[in-house]
Length: 289
Image 1 (tube, rainbow, N blue to C red):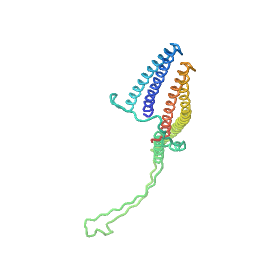
Image 2 (image 1 turned 180 degrees about the vertical axis):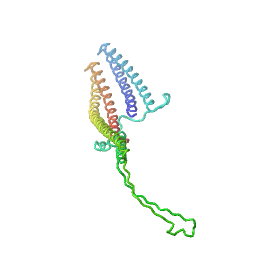
Image 3 (image 1 turned 120 degrees about the vertical axis):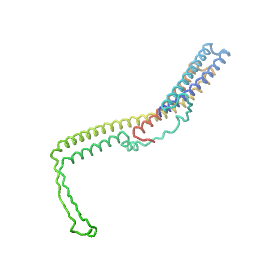
Image 4 (image 1 turned 60 degrees about the vertical axis):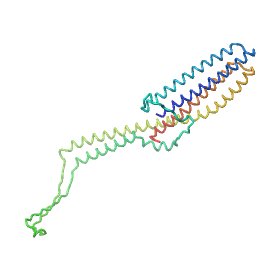
């Protein structure tokens, strides 16, 4: 559900990026028309700007369609009717509530699947001990008291009381083969569960290690892309001024704008990867909150 929710948020933010691209291309078209009317550029610059604007509007339509698709997928995950209104509240810029790696390692044995294996092992061990006790001799001490009196007048008289004590030795001669077979089955089940527990534990550790590595790498990518976004915005500002003054061509201005939009999209993807990696790390460690 976390992936579906933040994927919808990412696609929603993609619409904002597409809107920004439309705004930049509209500004570029205005500049191209102004320079064409002043005779500083050819008609080709205006046509190229119009083509870029049309492409930007088409990408905005596709981005809006992706938002609708992701919201429908989120409704499916939440088992909501497809016609029910759904508003998304949140941001990819929200701080990731993470856990220290040592804490995740400590919580790993508490995973439900690992606890299930531990419970099965305990049950098999109990069955083995129970089967083993069936084919061993047992010694018991028994005693009883008998009282017989028709009259209540002599109720406490000891002449009408009798006692009996004895020892009982039970040797299971014929039940030993069946008990041995049941003990063998229980021990086999116990070994099978132990192998399954080790296999599941190794997979859980690998899953946690992969999620943690993805979390660390995505956090580094976010920091790098944030710096790159600042540089890309500054580059677009310089390119617009240079184009107005006739220093660069419209193609160079368009390249700067494309790099800005690509950097924004890569930053959103990195933030989405960071959030989902943190969620996978908690799930891998069996942390519910």
